Length: 238
Image (tube, helix red, strand yellow):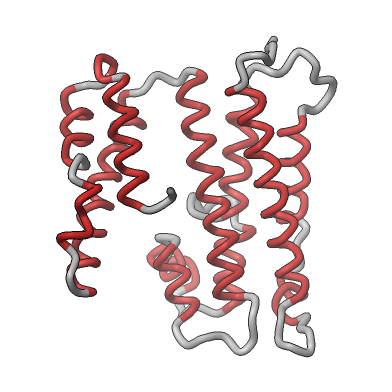
C-alpha cells in the first residue's frame, strides 16, 4: 500500500521501534503525524485537501530538519539520504515524462512542473523570464547547482555511496557506482536542442523520452542493488 496515510502510519510504527533514539522534539513531530490513517475523514473539498497537504508538508519539512541538524553522519544517515535522493530522482523522471514529453504541451504544464519540484523561485531568479521548455529542462535535468534537479540527486548519490562499505565480492566499480556513472553521463551529455525538437509523428519527444526511460531503468536497478547490498544479512562487506 503506497497511499499517503499508509506510508505515514508505517513511518510512525517505525519511529515507535526506535523511540529511545529520538529527541523530544522529533517524537512530538511523529506524534503529530499519528492521525494520518484517519485523514480521509477530514477531507471533503479540494480546499480541504490543499490545507491538509500544506500542513503535512510543514510537518515533514520539520522532520527533515531534525534529521539534517541532529543525526550523526554515519552509514545510517548516508543510507537515509541516499533513499531520499533516489526517491526524488524517480519522482522527477515521472513528472518530467508526464508534463514535457508530448507536443503540444498542456497550458501551464511548465509552471506546474516547477511548482511540484519546488523550483519556481530558482527559475524566476535565474532566468528572469516566463518558463520555457529549454529553461525548465536545463534547470531540472542538467543543472548541477539546483538541489531539486535530477543531476544534483545523482551526484549526491555518488558522494554518499562512495563512502559506504562495499560488498566483499565487488571488484573495480561497484554495480551501484556503474549505474550512477551511466546515468550521470547520460544527463551530462544530453543535448537540450535534440531533447526538445526531435519529435515523432505522434508528437512524442523521442530523445527526451528515451533519456527518461534509461534513467528510470537505472534508478530501478540501483534501488534493487542497494536493497541487496545493505539490507541482506547474508552479504559480506569490507
